[in-house]
Length: 226
Ligand SMILES: N[C@@H](CCC(=O)N[C@@H](CS)C(=O)NCC(=O)O)C(=O)O
Figure (tube, rainbow, N blue to C red):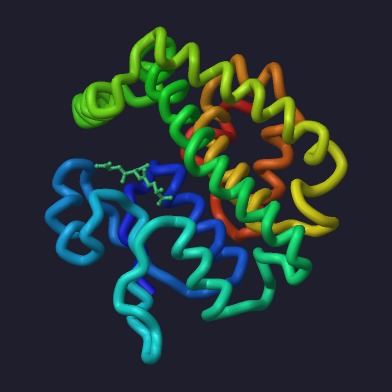
């Protein structure tokens, strides 16, 4: 299998966590933001990564969008499962996955790129990184005000998951798609010292989930713990 991705994208991390959890061998092709459209659009008709090319008999040629990738992987290799057999649990897991995708992934992007353009500039002061940050901020309308609204959404979400994650799972009594999605989409916040200080339990849990899914933590993440 081949995963078309941006190496730093948290939605691509979500797909990698799922592949790793299921221990499916895959390769990645790292694309450059903006130029990625030339590769991705003819394949999926969309503008976003991740895009998975299963390259296997009896499989679709292209699976685009992290949610669709997990749906495909559940059929391709049901064990270990990320979905639930029990109908209500499955409904809740998909509802949370969708909510995190729509609201938390986007909010984390706002907070993260606002940080990277200001206090977090020294994380990677290279011209290339600064160009990407500028493009992303302009593409999504990220500024101090919009990042503040996003930070409030994130605080609400963390308050909600804290009730579950401090000693359990978001759905049922085992790891599933909602836990995986929350871990992937909140992972960019691990580079922001204020979040690390305020929610140490959250980053311990995200670390555990990365271990469970055989996925390295984001670059520079460990430095924030030491
Ligand atoms: N709902 C999509 C969101 C993916 C997404 O927003 N990907 C971003 C990278 S984090 C992207 O490809 N942005 C490029 C663009 O919009 O041109 C998914 O879950 O796969």
